[in-house]
Image (cartoon, rainbow, N blue to C red; front, top):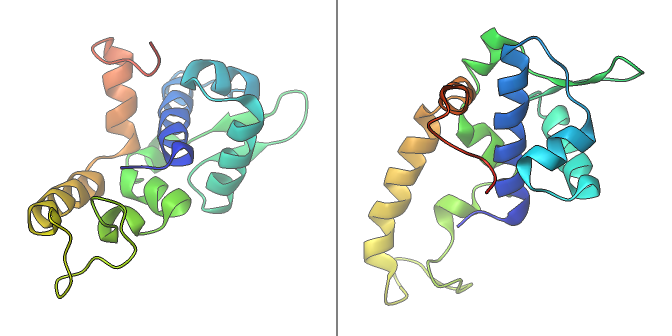
Amino acid sequence: MFSKACEYGIKAIAYIATQSLEGNRVKIGDVADNSGSPEAFTAKILGTLTKFNIVNSTKGPYGGFEIDVSRMKKIKVSEIVHALDGDSVYTGCALGLSECNASKPCPMHENFVSVRREMKKMLETTTVYELASKLKSGKTILVR
């Protein structure tokens, strides 16, 4: 459904948000370790998410990544998805065909339309703060 970059990006932002709730900035290595992503790939993803103003980056020995609590309450997961995957998750074919649409549908097209609609609704209503809160509660996990 999501690209690997998007999966890692959502997990990285969720981890950074949990640490930001405690007033901590986190380094790339820490984010990579706690989101199960390779460090160089994590750096690239966070660079993109910084450009989209989803996460703040501070350079230097006391630097790292953080998200202001008031900002994380406004950032929707759909913004992360858009920054990393564009709108392909909402428009792509369930079977990965390049020419799937209402006039020339794949065998799963009609069923997948409602799945995409529900997923879009969920992504547009779930905030980064909600993800961080669930992780802080200990009822959810990021990495096995």
